[in-house]
Image: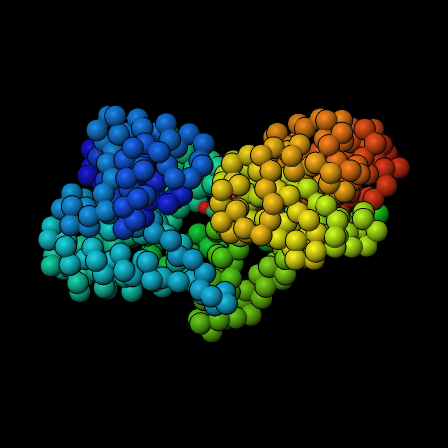
Length: 459
Ligand code: UDX
């Protein structure tokens, strides 16, 4: 499709969406009120780390299909379809989502809309928001009801934004008109041609689809982490247990990796925002489960700090702690809601001397947690450490040589909070190995590995 499309908000979501739409053949104008952001993008330099995105942006710019601006007037005059990708962070105190960026975007754009167009929300919002925005749009736009609104929630994962946008599992569109469906089918024509499921529904169902999906993923992660607590109390091993559960096709292995729990800009805020919205709708009990999901998730961080303290004889105070990882997950430099950084900060609060290394997230980590020490390499973070914590499962940590790191540390103690290491190899190199939900001593491990092979062969 050659549609002229704008994308408001050029953060992780908007920048990826804009670049991918250009790749799909649209003429795209990315819009952001922060001109430093748009200028960096216009030079082909995304101001954050997302694999493959820089190349895609540079390709779109070179082909003349992608440009960036901070001018709403230019965007309004340019676009037939306007995607809204601005942030909806959690309100202070976790009491619902802050919709001020979204409201400001609609309030600034609508009075400039003089031609029929489709405004498409992608930001995550409390159910009912789109209906209100549709009313605002029709009231404020000179073109009135001909400024139509649709909701098209985004399911991309950070670290896989390009792949997830170009090859999504499904596209969900909440609509109010047949015209909106025609426009969005044309935008997503390349994916539709490959047989991608395309769900056409109402605004409220589309809004809910996003938060319900993220709540389910968060619930799965907290479920396995709750089971990890029971494993610790009973001497069972959560790693083979998760594999056994995941082998059931009704359960599946995705989002069943135990360890440090979920973080990032989406899952934590979505479940809290969803709980708050259910309360406003008069059905608080319906989502009581999600409060437990959040509580299990919070405990994961404390349990990892507790494991480190146990290895050091009961406390981290005054001890040297090396931390491998700061990003909320590998493949991203995002430290928003990062469990990795939370563990480092907690150990520091408890009096530990904490040194952190992350392959890409140190700059962002330093601005959020300037009180921590940062190293330029894994060996640097490990230098003289009395315990090493692996908190983001970057491949370079999973592949690290336990002998090399062993020579750097003061004591060979490692807490593998993401189950990324081979315990056998690390123990063989003289490390004391601890991980959430795993037996503390190595004795049962060979037996467990044998058991896992038997179970897999039975399936
Ligand atoms: C998530 C959703 O997956 C995506 O569909 C939505 O659009 C945005 O929110 P993202 O935040 O990028 O995407 O990360 P995701 O890969 O889902 O991981 C979220 C967190 O859960 C990370 O901190 C990750 O480390 C953790 N996680 C994930 C686990 O602890 N265990 C798992 O099995 C999976």
